[in-house]
Length: 361
Image (tube, rainbow, N blue to C red; front, side, top):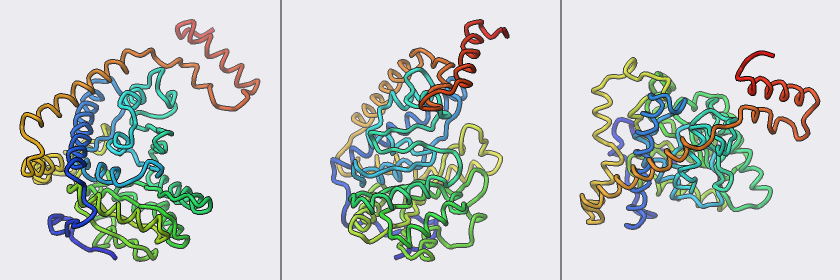
């Protein structure tokens, strides 16, 4: 079933009445969202200070990511874009490992082979982030087809933004998923902007979710600021997928508060008034208000959650920044299983160059 609610009125989208998060899970979701917000704000600042090289903020999209991640199982596979920090946290990725990758130190799991904010975690079934738009979509469908053939009862979930729905890989992936009924959840975080390109210039479709109609499977619009609504939509989609019902496209309507990345200046293409209006539906504030109304949280406890998140982050980043730097000669590692004579010669030449302090021999 496709829903065609307007993006400008997410409050009009029907709320979940079943499969909701428990009180304990709501509080857990809030903790994850606060941690993600704290890391997000700090990493943006660190990049501006020159202490990490690049960052793609997620503020405004925490409920969509946390709600989705909580509805999945550990055995499910994640194919992220480059903004899914909160998903990685909920999946169990260590904060220190995330920061090691952003710094690019000697304990970076990627060994410096990826740009900052492009992490991967094998134990958490979290595939490497990749910058090209939409390429992870076809990867997720291919992995889901493999799971079908192996009779693995899992789903693959691929994350992307509204801009990626204009990519070739989006349509190729959707078509394959529809034809082969793959257990795939296409999770579109429609934050209104593909860098500086507004959603209304992407497509004439009333919603992005209705694009699923052409490929023969359900498309669902959900209020991405409501963690319960997202959880419900993903839980339903997962149940349908593992029971053989095929894929689902979920359009979580959110808003990106910050820049597309630290290479972007959003003030050049959108107004302060627009951002201020969107912040009235800040998902972190909305969930806090709900927890307060349910007597699951008070102001003192809330302050403790924020202080704990900030102190944990500060300690982890200090450790990451103090770790030894990556050996520059490691760029020759893992190129071939058995290094070729030419590669060995180039490595020896590079190591001599590094030992000389950069003086040409």
